Image 1 (cartoon, rainbow, N blue to C red):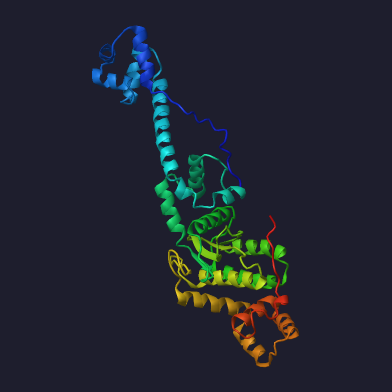
Image 2 (tube, rainbow, N blue to C red; image 1 turned 30 degrees about the horizontal axis):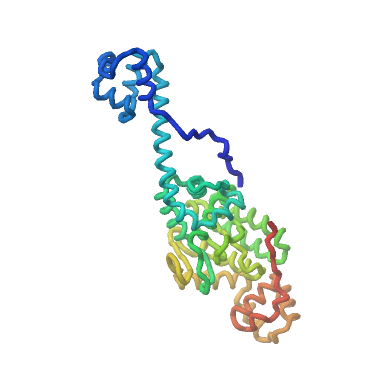
Amino acid sequence: MTNVNNRYIYSPDHAAPPGDLISEYMEELGISARELARRCGRSGKLIAEIAAGKAPVEPETALQLERVLGVSAAIWTSMEAAYQLHRARQAETEAFSAHYDWASEFPLNELAKRDYIERFSDKPRRVQELLKFFGVGSLKACEERVAELLQAEFRTSPSFKNDRFALAAWLRIGELRAAEIETADYDREAFVSALKEIRELTLAPIDDALPEIERKCAAAGVAFVLEKPLPKIRASGVSRWLSPHKALIQQSLRHKSDDHFWFTFFHECAHILLHSRKAIFIEMTKGPGSADPKQEAEANVWAADFLIPAAAMRKFLLTFDGTEEEVRRFSADNQIAPGIVVGQLQHNRIIGFAALNKLKVYYTWVD
């Protein structure tokens, strides 16, 4: 991800109100605020308040000061704008400092390590970076954006609790990365056709498969993102609609085995194909919500059958004795990775979770 480096943007820590300069001119000319007001055609009270920094210099007043004092109206309005911006920045800095404890709940150091935010030591700048990361302009908007993100549908092991702040950040990363993927408008038939081709990639090395998954999905209107989980994240995948014409599948590779990766992928594809674009599902034991069990079950059945047709699995189980050779032969006949077959056999309690694991392929993240 490319970030704009803001370390060298000019940001003065002081700005004088235009009233200071007006006071200097009045002293130099030896006139009072009342006299300056008379010459400008304004009330004495207004000019006195401007000189004291209690009232702003409006454009009309700036034009009058230009004629009386010989200083361009643009200078007066620029000074006023700089002063008001400075005051707003001061107030914002105080608010950011007060909310740092909230912001520090997010994995700021990890986001900086991954170059999604700039690394700063002072608290207000760290909060500011967080707002930029979420693409919002205020603390209230950030809180609302986080709440919105946590309504996205994702799969997670029910025995673990997700850190909601880290989860929101991980989901936001998915959005940012998806924005960099150019996709066609979503086409359901094209997506189903792409998935048939992607299924064949289960036999390919993962490094070869990933770019093909992204390419084929993008051609059908779906952005595919594989993003390393942030600390305390237990989600395996997320599927959601970014717009009426673009969907997102985001995976974490949490279990790092081929059977889990591929089942998660097709599970998320099922949500895109089967369920409402407006529906919101969250599956977790504790947190902001829970998934609809019926739709989760539908996605599970669809993914399992797409990977290994149910009829073929039933026929295989009639004579299956639990041997490695049988799994290899069945996998070859059905053009599917052996690890995926093992995963389904384990999930359906046909074999134990420790059986035949050497047929699975295990992945590692390379930083």
